[in-house]
Image 1 (spheres, rainbow, N blue to C red):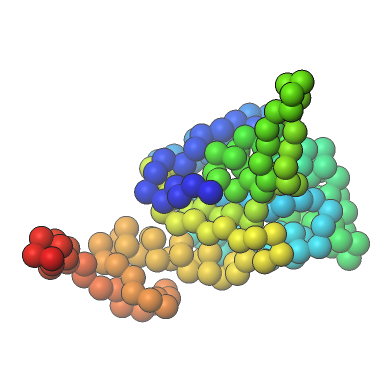
Image 2 (spheres, helix red, strand yellow):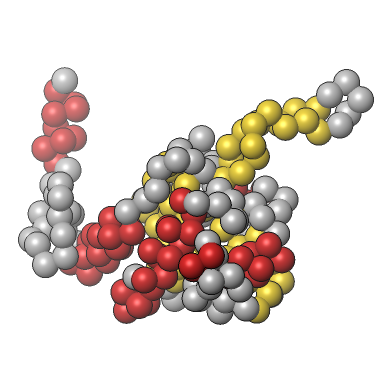
Length: 210
């Protein structure tokens, strides 16, 4: 696992399904630099059980992300064809029909690896063949990226643990509050609450004297 907070979000280009039915090549987050905040979230696998509950939950809040100028992007290690097929399947049958935000196909698994969310390890056998030790799918990772392409927040859950979409929105609000007001957000801060003025002089003095 790698900590990406404070670092440039890894760049990539891959196929994706957008608008629920259109496959595009060379999808990249670079198109949003200087324009939008991004919430990029990884999920383990198409046609599963917890994953559709998360994808639908994010879709239900899509308008709230968009109202904040945030681009919501999903990613798994399945193919773009698998994504497309799942998107055509009704929710009542376990599908994700109605999901409109982009879903990236990380078939090479390099995106998941670069973001530190790839479950499983790999090595080479004595004949030089690639051998996987684990499922080689993505953990439930979530990354909040600012307009400069810097990761400001990351959360990684193990495969059985679904995420809280409202918490993702709260972190967006906290980041935008800080950017707009220059004040930091204390514990349990929510939109509309007061922030705090940060002072690092006292911290520096403490570290110097101790």
